[in-house]
Amino acid sequence: MKGLVVYYSATGSTKKVARAIHRGMSGVIETDLVTVKDIDPDEVADYDLVGIGSPIWFFRETANVRLFMHRLPRLDGKSGFVFCSHGTAPLGIFHSMVPFLRRKGLSIIGWGDWYGSAYQVLHAPKPYFTDGHPDGIDLAEAEAFGREMAERALKVAAGQSELIPKMPAGPDADLLFHPHPIGEPFPGANPTRAVDLKTCLHPDCTLCEDVCPAHCIQLLDDPPSFGPECSNCSLCNRLCPTGAIVLEGEAAKRMQPIKRIDMTKCSYPECRLCVTYCPMDSLDFSQDPPVFTHACEGCDLCWTICPEGAIEIVNLKDTHAKMWEGFSNARRGGQDHPFLEMLRQAQAEGRFRPLVEMDDIGWESPVFSITRTPRFDIHDLLKEE
Image (cartoon, rainbow, N blue to C red; front, side, top):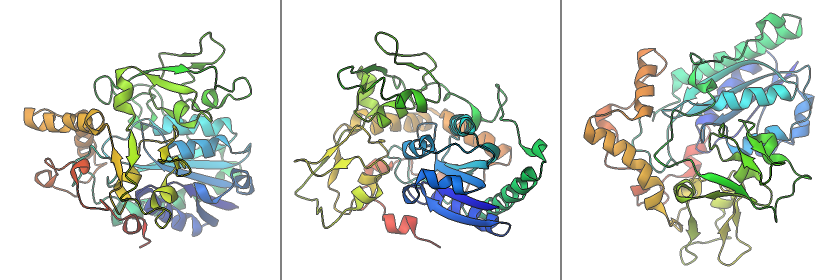
């Protein structure tokens, strides 16, 4: 049996977990470790056990991981597992990943999640509530998880199919398996969507329908419709090859950070950090001025790691500053932010260990207020320990 761990990591947390899982698996079976950028999806068919990992963005896996999963061949007869890293709100990702991979024929034999530090979430206080994770204890658990997955895969291959777990469902299921976030991330965050029929490639392209976790897109409707099950994950508008899906209304301004590059500060092509580390290859320097395409995840990693501070967010007040109000208002009003309530419950249940005291949380210093450049050094974040 041969195993594979494939992952995407923006700032290092998922990478650390993936490496630990790989160590655990390698003690049982031959196992390779790669990023989603470094393997052709068709090559996954050469493996018997496949683990796929991602941070949680917008209550699902990152769009580049979703696209990688979409491009996978049929994997009938093979075993798989999923894993993730996240901040305070472990919501939705396995509800998105597990059914999708099962439709590829993969038997999902397990899942695991770990808390991680926050760096490129611009509306997060810094230091953040989950900073310091994953630590040595977390990584020891991840290594044990990898070993368990390899051992379980061997038993399943030997005929012990009863070891394949059922996907949790219903109101009592872990939040990782819930289809929707709890309410809106902030007021007015659910814009309507429309399809530009002049640029839409349907029926030759059905990518948006294929990747939608909620199965709520109906391209045959006139006009195409997005059903009430939509959880605003934005996979459709991120992954549309022509950018034919557009967000409408006031909420669109809050959901889409608008960026521009100050070319008096930018040293491209000598510096290519933003291009190299963009998960969606959404920066286009062939245009003058450079543009961020519709595929931009809004992860703001480029802003975080730019050594010259050349990347600006034009609508910062309408996006991250608005979301920051939720944290600051909760503190001033003595009320709980819903994400903090989730963290408190996780701590009470023994699923979270705070490594940053509440008094040390950066209540007055959201990430978007950091003026030094780079805000965080990408090489430090992704270095191998």
